[in-house]
Image 1 (cartoon, helix red, strand yellow):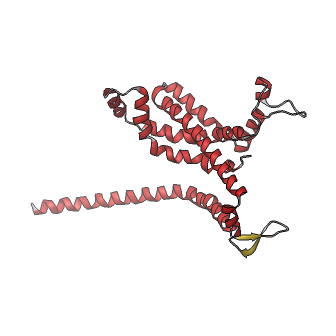
Image 2 (tube, one colour; image 1 turned 30 degrees about the horizontal axis):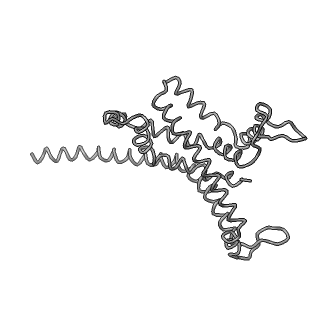
Image 3 (cartoon, helix red, strand yellow; image 1 turned 45 degrees about the horizontal axis):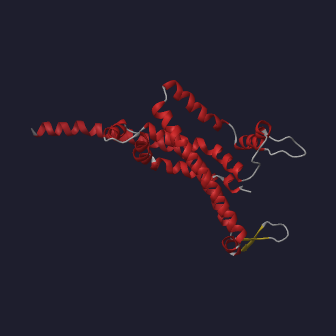
Length: 247
């Protein structure tokens, strides 16, 4: 009996070592794949934000407007005390919040229809249609919407809305909010769609068996279960640099 146990332990040792080597190889492969994007994120995103925060503590030259070598906290104090800067921040937060609400209100039913109700062929077509705006740069899409909202003047006839409806909202808050919602809608849709794809059918069946209607099931079961997946998506319009370009 003791010899059999020793033989079993000897046979198990190579297996454990192979499993350990496979895990280490997979970990190294994962680190090699993610090292480039993580380094890019740290350098470009986190690095630019760090430089922006650090530059706030340097005084500006009165003539050139460029930062000097003198450290100061007057810039931070002015940002939190002067009404012009406070109102600018509040307007930017309001524009970003409105764009986020619009994206969320459109993404929830759209993602649910694509993942749960649409046929396989329709699902593929809708996913491709939702991903098509990502193939175009931000500036191209922004200028395209600028041509749509062009109010017109004595020097021009206006944009698409002016020509079709005879009315255009112009370049005010309405146009800015719709532009941000259009730019960031795919980033809101994709994680919510992925969450709906992983939602077990048993939860929906249990809600139906308990007598809940379609709206109650969507609000209490589907939307609540995908709430944690919607939080990263909801932060996309709020992080948008263009959210600070409100008029």
